Length: 447
Image (cartoon, rainbow, N blue to C red; front, side, top):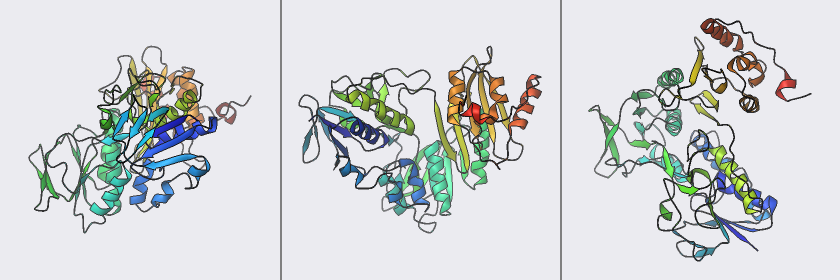
């Protein structure tokens, strides 16, 4: 019986295992040093905030793995020996016929003095959650936390700490929050929202050093503005990098991650990589070569399962989309809406923001052809399938705005903003568009 070994039990590795089992009777082993069972990484914050227990983050019952004949091994892989087709753990080895590397990411560290002190941590793994529970159980033990890095993990960590009334200083090296990703208006909205939640936001500010107390624990940080900020917890959330250090002597081609082709194959026969640790030789379309995103890990797992089971198919992730929350503001993006820094020469933006609420949209379109390129929404829930269809059909911006009600996913009694959005567009472009009535026939392609 062919043996498939998967290193890593995150969304990519577990999805691959599940779909291989659906398609075959192959022997499957998942190796992980992080946790015994698969859990939803995006739900870690809600455990700390008291909204759920850790076991609630596990999508499958513990009996699921045995019933589906997926063997789980708790351990750390030190080495991949591709010549002998085995992986070496601390006290044992496991032979494989095909190997899938799905080891995810690790938090970035940039050589800051004091970055390895007690009380300094990231927020990525189950162990990070457990460490934060110890480092910041309440606002008596933790008088202040400093978070370094202005991305999604940083704002999640700030929200977590604020639920326990722990004062938070947030160091963001950019001049506006996440402005390498978000257009100007949206980035400014999030700046204001962070401050409204009593988070001490320090823009255009870099960490210089983390200072230790007599016990080797963080007691303060210094910034490039000459400030010293006392704190007992430092959250390092300046992005993540592929977790591939253990492969450096393996012969598997590495860049920042494990190099793969469109079929998710490495340079070594019968070895594959998926998820955050996989790096395409060249990005697919506008996508980056490495995508540390939950849904792309799932899609890679599904795709590779087909190849492993004899139906060799190319990884085709389709139109870009993503979603997140900035405190209590929901964010969705479909297609491509680039920040000012990365904006394409042909790209134009239409931006609407509500006068009093934290609600806005930005629509990207081709300035010559008016083709719809993408949309960001804050505070309005939208239908993925509708935008996916419009992007595929290359609709123009005026079509999208007129039929925007079809894409609105908010419940019936939520306030609707399409009329205000179109009114602003008409005023800016001297046009006479009007909002079309929502149609379930159009939404669900009912003839």
